[in-house]
Image 1 (cartoon, chains in turn purple, blue):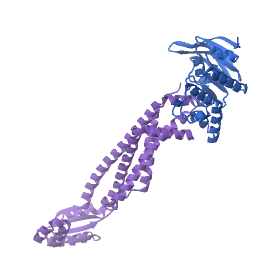
Image 2 (cartoon, one colour):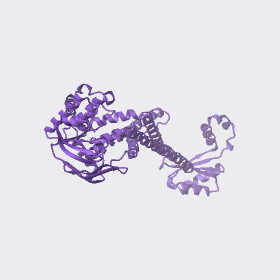
Image 3 (spheres, one colour):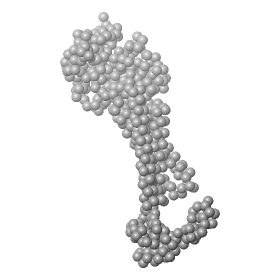
Image 4 (cartoon, one colour):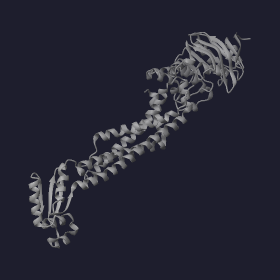
Length: 277
Length: 223
């Protein structure tokens, strides 16, 4: 790239005007949006779904005697399990702690209104067999596993993530289209100049390069701004969601992805260059 | 240097050139003259390969122009100096940038580009307008910038289409003297002009074109 080409790039960036700004903003929004969803995806996996972490199976017993019998049978059947028995009083106190607004009401109720509960931490692989075994026992009235809500959460989260990524991809395609239009408009505006440059010995590469570079710079600028916005969001949310981190590679990749998307748009836009005889 | 064999070119069925066969040797100075519409500009456009002939063979500097690949066309044009009738200056670039454009394509060092631009613009009396844009110049000044751009690379062949069209008589003669000087140094020069007085004041081989044909090929001297 010689001095003339760089000056041409600067002129084109100036001439891209409002459309260029739109392209930069689109890449920034797409980059930030995609980055937020990518980081959320990792955070949900790590913090909420925690694949591989022990699963909890909870069984509600018919009464204290049944709870004791069930605990004995469970420990005999699965000796390695950690089983915690919560008496009706414990359950009452636990609920009052979970729902402080209702604590006064809950604590005034007779503890006989609360069932005894058995809580067993099992390995994810054993969860279904332990839950099935408990359901088959007459002492238990209700058996629930944390796996079930985990699966529901996972399904909901994955739908939201897919929608988020589709939107980010659509924004990037939009950015490529805007850059394509910007380059096409510049080519049309410079058609006479391009013809002159050819007549005085410019190669196609000499002509196309500044358009490609200015298009890519618009995308890279949008990506860099997206990375800054993403890093800013991380800092802002650090107090609320300390586990939510944005990977450094993601911050570095955003300008590159923006430049690549915009370059693709510019390449398509350059197809409108008039051909030589 | 230049060989035309049976060159025919037409636009929308109207013949611009009809079966022209001629040659220009290395180091020659040739005028191309004739009335408007005789085919002078088409003759030159074929020479710098802005057009391809409908039939016939054009060889310039040993290269068959019809056979040149796209990449080679650019290389070929860099060895030519062309002064266009409508100047064809790059409007968004300064005078100096217009003149150094081809040098930058060839990766000349920045200082050398500036040195050459200054020298050639000084020769044209335009060294003080190096940073002006073409639209800030008069027609004559633009013409001289176009000539400076054609000369800056010291090409093997200079093609000039009505180079004196926007110059006053004194400047026109100065320009012709300059082209003659360049020609004495070995550069082949082809000048298309309808200015009979200019031809007679600078005796040289002259091709007379009429309705797309060469009707006379003679050495013209002052009457």
